[in-house]
Length: 68
Image (cartoon, rainbow, N blue to C red; front, side, top):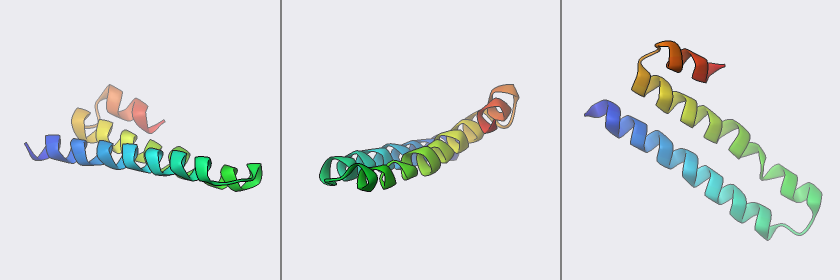
């Protein structure tokens, strides 16, 4: 039960960060300004999804592959 809630929270965080990044990209006028808003998706969202997989799969083969 706690693991399912943790996975859900981590995935909600990943989606929220991605949605906010998309909003930032849409709002910025210049290309270089838009580039800054893509960084959270590649770092925070990816780490949250990998952590959710590790929590769900308990560091078995799929959990370890998600860390790579």
